[in-house]
Length: 72
Image (cartoon, rainbow, N blue to C red):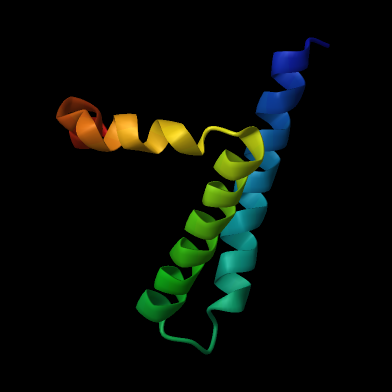
């Protein structure tokens, strides 16, 4: 089995788990507030990934490029 297929299957599995755990976690909470908190946590995690990869200096290039910002 090729590597890309393994990654695709793992991605599909984790996406399904996110949906399932999201439903379980939101049973007694306001959905909008919980989604906002989840988005903040995801953003912090992604900034951490960018820092670990050493690509923090590329953020300035993206912020200057209006076309990139529009499509992002």
